[in-house]
Length: 184
Length: 184
Image 1 (cartoon, one colour):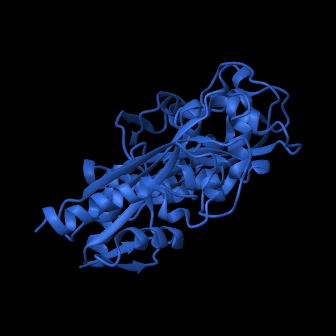
Image 2 (cartoon, rainbow over the protein chains, first blue to last red):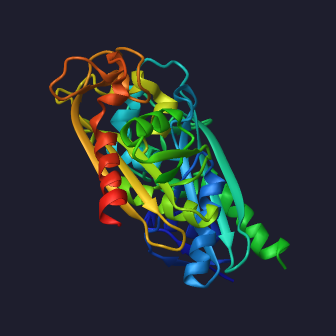
Image 3 (cartoon, chains in turn blue, orange):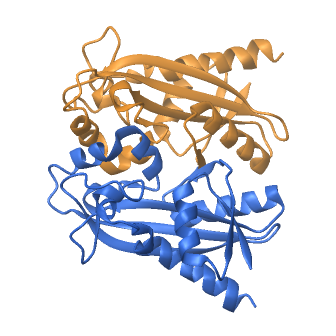
């Protein structure tokens, strides 16, 4: 069993390989592609997977993820990458200065689609809190300011955090179950 | 001459009517639609206009606009509406606290497309600065923190600011020229 994962983010490839292989081989297609601007991670991932499956003429997996901070009304949410490239981790901490409630969650939506078929998607979420400072450099994106539930360290401080990040793993495990069990 | 302007934003309708009527009648189609997530306002507007023209089977005008702040690497940019809904004007001013250079510009991209044709787009930009405080309630979006060049007041403080806002007017005037002169 093999999936074609389309992403330009090598960290996501590393994480999804950790969750799916050896049972499901992850074939990485390092293609940049456009995504929808939407509030809904699953809608974004499904639209991408469907468009890419029809374009590449093969079954495709696409992922969309984001950090949703309660005290910022879900910001940066589905625009996490765009926001991160512009205001960085410091920008997020600046916005959090006046905010007591530091609750946040990471969300990953993984979509699978075959050419000329409807896409299906799988959601994974993980609660945590925004740290007071930037800590560590493992992982990517907002990992150095995200402290997962029941931990005192950010993912940035956690070596091999890809083995622990539950949100993307949860979504990947739903995909695995679908591909290996349900779809048979 | 009539155009079909697809937008869910009544303020944009008001502004584009002010710039285009009576020469070009603006028929408002109050439809919500999905947009691309891209760095490029023109690409977003063109993709929307093309998709909507094919869906509605009529020529369509779509617009995408944003506020690009130099000291924030162009943030909030093409995600202006998404960002505004979550962190508001206060969020932008918070991010600007440590930043001396308050230069910014508004950008509007207006795209026109006929069914089964390629879209064409027109850009308008306007320089200004981010105010120290939120001022006024005219206009919409980031108008209460945007001081246009050669002014001391924000657009939010400017009654009938739709008559003065140059960025969307510039794009609209290019569209007018195209429709009434070039295309004939």
